[in-house]
Length: 190
Image 1: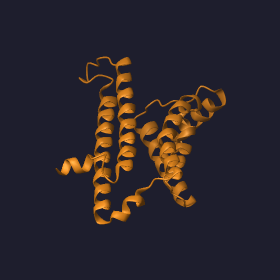
Image 2: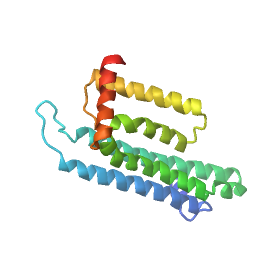
Image 3: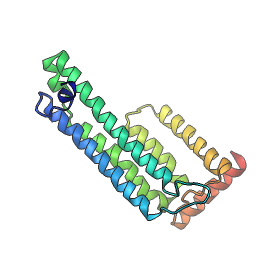
Image 4: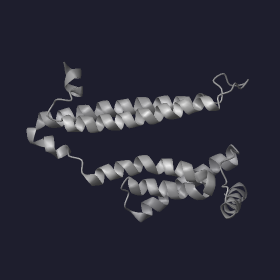
């Protein structure tokens, strides 16, 4: 009975149900698409029994489980809101600004994934972090700069000095040179 009430599309909050269900479907579709792409580079590694695609697959499954959990929590929150006050049914209305913000938060990382190999990770990462913070409504310029700087310094430290991981340096010559200079600086002076 309780589960039926949570997922009941015919309830007073049915419009919110379909919005949550649409978001869940988009996440599951994306996770499924990425998971299917892992088969293109899956091969065995003698030291690692799960192969090259092990971690990407684990992350896809974790993202899908997170999307399902978020959907369930949204449904519980919507049910509690309507139970507390029947007038609160319309308080959950999602306007065009909120839809645009959710779409941007979903699309911005995909755009960055397309641009990062061309421009280079080291040049594009700070703009990506700052852009995501702005999309998530962090309005203080000081906080955006501080958080972006801290994350960027941590990424440089981890990937260039500790693990020596080769991240994309860009295909365009000017961006390539700038990325290589950043790597050199990070390995010597950070």
